Length: 342
Image 1 (cartoon, rainbow, N blue to C red):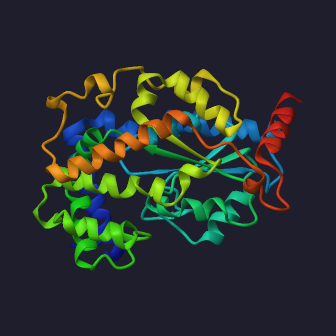
Image 2: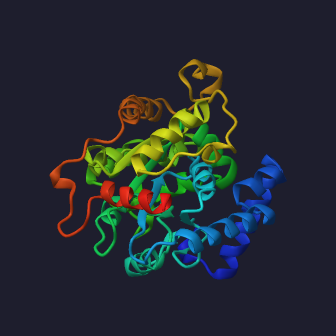
């Protein structure tokens, strides 16, 4: 089956409609409305609040801090987007934003840079999930204020369930294309080293079921957090979805401190604290999918690496993190706070 970026506009639209109908049928209309921010009252009120903020405290174009929300699809990123979108000083560019995205993939870097530089907000939140493997390059784009990145991951079983419910065997088909070399330039196969490609082949994706395929894809994509050296960067924060839904206030305060952003309860007002299925005390066998044993072992090993990294937070900044000729982000954040108080 052709990738989304290879099919006609009609076929692509038909595929999206069918996917949304299946999602509405299995998860309910209310879940679809929440997922895609389809409530017009909510969208209008948010837009008006941002317009009022621009009139009162709008920034000079070129000062906005880019914030890249990355990781893997079906990992709870929309929950963070909704919370940060409630802050009027944040301009949100989600994957359905046609200025920056085409079929959920980023347009060329010069379009991204120009869009962020035009902003009169303090922050521009961009969610390029398909370009998560490029987040180090995005953070180093010239001509922008020093940015930040939030890498979000979710319990592998819960993520696999959500992925298969909405997208069927899409992850499995991508893995098979990686294994047989037909992936071409599609985003799923970019920046994978030879060892990872060989590992995918060894797991024999042609024999896997969709849930095991989704789990192996979880392993491949989330391994990039370490493979790209993001765990060593002071401008990248690893966020665990399961911690967010268990204790939203603590996690949002942590995120705000990382972004040098004023905390407000509205950032998590839409999250009802609850036990996550991925929490240790809920990791019983009946919650675990019958994932192929080798794939399960890989995912368990990666989860044991991710958890302490998420708890530890980003590495402390050093002089090497400061780009020549660009002010330090913390100083810029202090200037923003001073302007807001004024």
